[in-house]
Length: 346
Image (cartoon, rainbow, N blue to C red; front, top):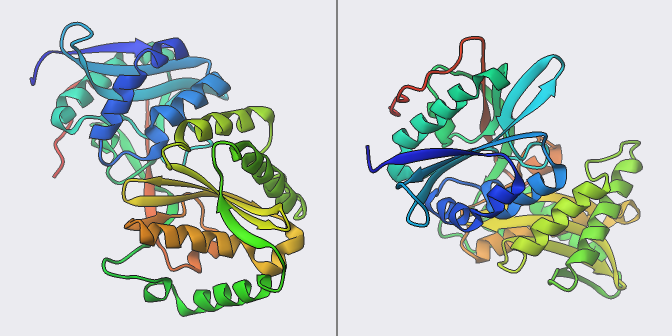
């Protein structure tokens, strides 16, 4: 074993806040991790939504802090579903990818420690269900679990190496749609696309909630942005990640008013399209298309390799020419998982 590994089960936000720096360092070492595993994303989720039975497994290298190194973190919780007690990953609902963080240098031994802790929690859960796992998830090595794949699809637009403009990789039909939308909105006065600053983030977020709800209400549906707790969660995330240009709020203004807002996350080689809302009265001007185009242009200019449209197979996403990235679901019921060494990847 590469050094002594010890485990702790963290059960409240205070314990998680105390390891925030180590959590961030571990995330940096896990090159396949998404922004949804960041401390700045998951800790606000835990603080705001207060899961009843938080069971975060932390795996450390070394015998005592501060010399210890955090080498794995599995953010788990237990919730009731009917008569069953379900062991799941934290962040559900608002996170398109869920996962554990496992340092690649300690992968097999840290996973074994996680499985052993899950085994020790056996009296607290009936079914283990881990959803929204990417193909590179370390949890897919979980020995004895049943893999149900695919769980969902996230359309991903690849940006080929060497391209310099949208016409090099966006379908011709969508380029025509974009050109027509830009020509139509050019007939209006005082129109621009801007990005939120720390000072205007609250305005943009309020507009996003309002516009998203208005769009869905016009179709007789509530949308996904409902409630003060959800706004509080996103406000905390935005304040934590906007200063580093990771979270970005794009706004389309007309005569000083925001008629469309897009919530994006730029991380490593990927730009993530998270959510958008626009005023239904301006649908003729295709504000959503224009905001997505700006995100794709920024991703291209900054050398990103892809734009991930995240969970959901809405038709408008496919007009940009993406392919599906399939996520997996791990479920286990009945006989408990063993704490033996997981199988190595082929």
